[in-house]
Length: 140
Image (tube, helix red, strand yellow):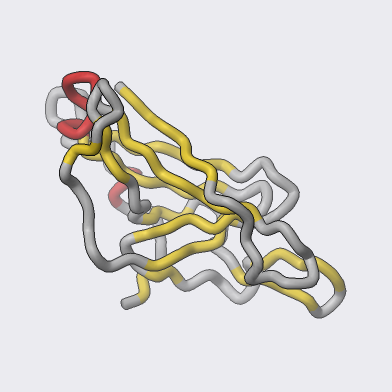
């Protein structure tokens, strides 16, 4: 299943009392693409790519795409909280581009954190060779 990533849900404004999720932005400030794990596959535009060398390109998401980012949940003691999905894909966040993703507000209660990972591209000659995954945590 492929998704376009066109922003639509993230543009809906709700009062804090009515909102069931928060929208976060992941911006790639690195000079190389990042690979993130998602709950769907996304089609990038033909004009959205990173060029390592003439003719050596890696397609990725256009700027400000809305994605379903895969993350895990931990309690205040960093013990796992049951949450997640069995099926996932990957998306490429290009240099100087951003993606938006939602986190259900209920997951961030009681000192919980959500944790997601990304991998940076490490070798310009092998565009599929990604390094060790880096984890980021978000809390209320």
